Image 1 (cartoon, rainbow, N blue to C red):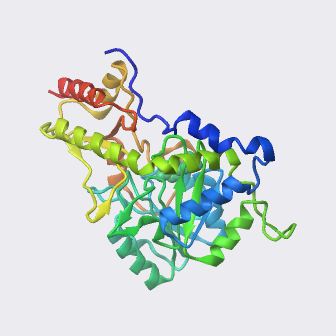
Image 2: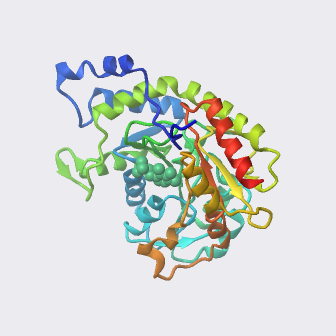
Length: 368
Ligand SMILES: *Cc1c(COP(=O)(O)O)cnc(C)c1O
């Protein structure tokens, strides 16, 4: 087999379906600025995510940056460095100080038992990240937030379509942010949304994404983060197929699990209980204490065999050049060591079972 196997491949509706969805735009010429597709998509998302309010944005990053602005946070924000750089950037770009809490070694989300020791009189919020489809300890975080009167914004970029104890994951915290980038479980080409049950926050976000405008005058120093009609139409189409798409990912994940389960030198992520997962990623951990080869050697070997894997999240955000030489509060050894051992294997709804067979045979061959 010599074809390239990709890590992700954008989910796309049948071509005809998309063409039908955008056809009216050639009559109306309304292609952006809160048009009919945009409004329909927001309404459908509200139903799907089972929350009071949803507002869509150009991308997940702008959604997060604007939510932080909308909540008027000050001083320090507790977060993790084991995430995509967007989470840390959204805090620092708002002029706030990130304080780094480590993750737990089982499910790779923020270690909720370590949050309280990082809280000071300057702390205004917690921005935890739901990781690889696993969700944070939302109950513990909720009780800490109440005790210290802190806001909670979840970076839920990995968790579209999930429920925890039969409740939509979109309903936790003051707000949750989703990314609809092409590489995610659900995409609008580029895009993102904020879900919140707080009507006031929602009203402010709607203004902030459109230059802060309120009746033609700028009430806030906003930006331009409006989703266009082509993206909204993509979202409307992809939403019709999301359940089928998640089911396919589940089957692929189970196939990986059964193919890799007997390899002693690979460790796996612990799934959070009571969670209906979206199977967004397939991480494996190459444990250096029991494996003959290290993660980077396996990564290179897979690459040579045209299998695209991803070292993610690597490096942790605090080790990127723009943060590396600065002092931050919090020590995060678990995050750093995981980032050196983890590899995401190809997972997308277009992947075939025989691709997984091929990938796993290569892995077995290299690790044995
Ligand atoms: C993808 C992602 C983002 C950013 O979303 P964009 O839509 O690409 O701006 C933020 N946080 C996490 C954890 C992500 O995976």
